[in-house]
Image (cartoon, rainbow, N blue to C red; front, side):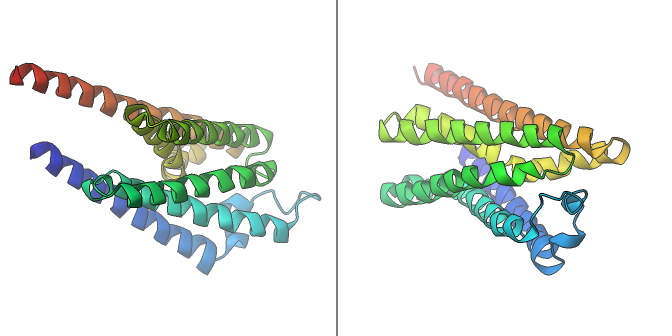
Length: 216
């Protein structure tokens, strides 16, 4: 009961964060517009930069990312797990949003705020996103449920970089050049998110072993 209550609070926390993040996305990029956003710094000076093409890829990128963020917490709920068909269908949508996004990121990364170092960081992030999600999907097809869950949690940790990056980058941008602060924030977000998932997974395994020992 206590574990279920903690999970419910965690899922509520995730949804509140996703809601706030989605509101930020709507205000920043759909109401105010991209032209005045920090991410536009340096882009317009690049003679190879095409605003129309960039927008055509960037907006699907953030919309699909927000959908993936929103689907993650529900897939962790008892309601989803008790409805295999719904769980599979939402899982397919989650995977689809990421695999399409993976195709969009390389072009967007070419004009990353902070230049080449940021571009490399976002491409590394993209590789982690593709790798963890592909492994999760593969394990699902193979019916290796425990491994599937582990890899999808890792995938969601990478998806969560959408949020954590924007938080982590704030203090670094205050005293470092964007060419340094952006890559640091990307790498740090990847590391922190994955470490958190691994810590929770190991903690869950330890508690499960302790419970089985007590039952015996």
